Amino acid sequence: QVQLVESGGGLVQAGGSLRLSCAASGRTFTFYYGWFRQAPGKDREFVAGIVWSGTSTSYADSVKGRFTISRDNAKNTVNLQMNSLKPDDTAVYYCAADPRGPVATLQYNFWGQGTQVTVSS
Image (cartoon, rainbow, N blue to C red; front, side):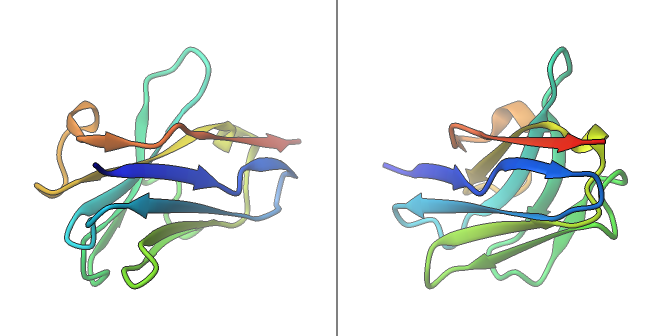
């Protein structure tokens, strides 16, 4: 059984940085990983994704140039480095994984419990 556990959320001032980590249990090194976020009253949205080899990544337009996704298959972790944070980045951030590759948001097989990120102005 695959379990995902996020960590690294918190409160930061605008312009600051946070690094989120997603620790996976189980054999997930071939899975596609995505980071998503959900703000109050809004739908869950894609933030960033990475293929199993780490050689291909994708980002939402709103975070391009500020966020970087990476993975360490030896440690079974996926990270999201978030720089130049804005109040609009405030949300619960979720890690998700799927063996099929990038799928629609709600179709990911495995999800973490989420970690809160709050950016103050």
